[in-house]
Amino acid sequence: MGGEAVIRTWELTKRYGKTTAVDGLTMEVPRGEVFGFLGPNGAGKTTTIAMLLGLVHPTAGGAEVLGCDIRKNLGPALRRTGATIESPAFYPYLSGRDNLRVMALSDGGPGARRIDQVLERVGLTERAGDPFKVYSMGMKQRLALAAALLNDPEFLILDEPTNGLDPAGIQETRKMLRQMVDEQGKSVFLSSHLLHEVQQVCDRVVIIDRGQVIAQGRVDELLRQQEAIQVELTEAEAGKAEAILRGLDWVQAVRREGTRIHVSAPAERSRQVAEVLAAASIYPSQLLRVSATLEDLFLTLTRDNDHA
Amino acid sequence: MREWLGLVAAELLKVGRRKITWVLLAALVAANALHGRSLRTELLDYRQAMQSGVGRFGQAIAPEVARATAADLARRMTFPDVLDEVWVITDFWGVFALIILAALQSGEESELGTGRRLLLRGVRRGTWPLAKLCALAAAAAGFWSVLALTILPIGLWTEAQAGSGGGLGALDGHVWAAHLGQLARSWLATIPYLAFSVWAATLARGAGPALALGLGGRFVELGSTVAGAVLVGMEMMESSATHALYAVWAPLHALSFDWSGKVIRAWGNPSWAQPLSPIPSSPVRYSLPWPFFDSPLTALLILLAWTVLWIAWAGWSLRRRDITA
Image (cartoon, rainbow over all chains, first blue to last red; front, side, top):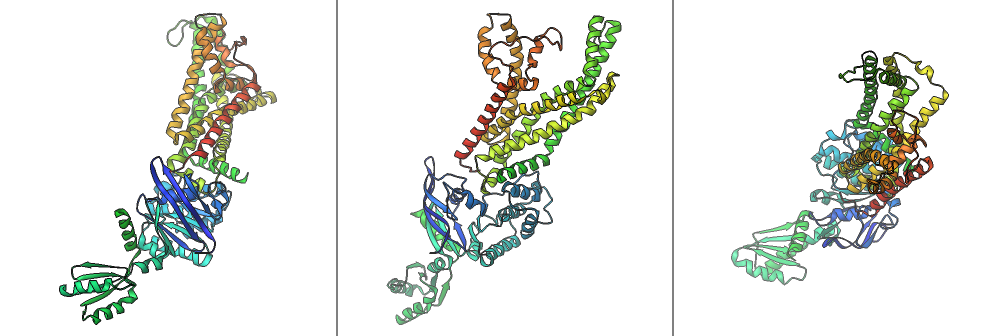
């Protein structure tokens, strides 16, 4: 991975009594990227984020955010970080603008002009004077994002920031995050269940389950590992073809479903699959390159982990 | 320092935007005005009895008692005495109002999850309760100041109902200074209640339990004062029948916010001793049985100790805690 890391964790662990929420998590989040943090419900994502933000004390292990130890000296890192965690929490009797004023006053930072800028950025200018209690879920999320952007942070930690947003809002958020990373050199650590969105916006992901890392790497590399070639044959040919394909050293796995064979191998090997089978006088009626999605990868890995 | 001042300013912004702040303030002004009105009713009652010897409810009142009481009431309804008279109401109910405000203001952070958001901005956990207390103390100063000002028109109105008095002209520099001193002392005596509310809300993680503890505690204090008036009387008469009860009650009450608060308010002339006097508002004052004290310095130190204890405890518990929701 190399380069400077915005987050570094080592053996980070959190136990609540006998329950282990995060179990020896070790990961590194590089600077200047959008980093996806994925996992099924109860995997320990929010607990991890809460530890990184100093809300929850780790039981063992440690972590650094922007080079600051989360146990000893997190304050300076938090002042350079914008974060949202779980559902948007604001004062219901204050307007959106006044909620941001409270935030701005609390850290002695930005003034009215910056508040106007972030409200405009998240598309909330027109409703900024309305009390928070009348906001829709999407507007609440936008305000949470505005609060995270208020001190113009170099690093954003966002927990489900698109929850409740309409498709246009999701797209705007995605564009905004990419723009912040690509044009302003910021870093984003993004936890989300919307895998399609994560796939489009993230450079790297880490997938955790039951508090442990089960996969991490660049999104394109992980997806390549999930690529497959699907071959449709007659009943008589399928058995023979399966045996041939299993013998190829670049094939990771072969799965047969009736007359269909699923070959786990890079998609560009499809021509070679056709040649190998043709050499054995087997001619598939159909040969498809199957591109993997992050959702496929996620479901495969978390299902495998369930069976383990 | 900048962070701390920012937190205080943010809290004050929230206090100002809360409807309940203004409702409580309006209720206190109304209570003061109603007290002026009730004094008038009482005055008319005794004036009637001066002639007929019969009160409004048909009760017999000796004319000389009615005359003395009516004169006393008229004095209490005119400047400068009317200031103290109405201030008693402010002082009594104001503590309740500020406990309610402090509990709501402190408890909401846990209930709404906004405390988490503040901590995400790098606010130090230890300074948070202290900043809250300072903001609440500043808000309380604003509360008392508004009430101290509204007492002037209420006093004029009350005086007009008594049909005598010299209006604000009766107030010289000495009276104004005394009124301001009263305001400052009432404010000081409120601070431990605010600190207690911050502590209760922090530990209980909500406004409801903080309200119950704050208001419940205040009622216990007031109940204890009533019981104490009997026990102190018995103790002064050297009655052995209640001595064991007194021995338990007295040290607790002497250490309470209420006792120290009264010493501060009365500045060395504890007002609770007055109910023991046979004549209302008599200057007769008994010496205080041990362990009571009438030193404002001791009272200030005790109130400060309580305040530090509650805030330090709240900060300590917040530092150790996982903020999960």
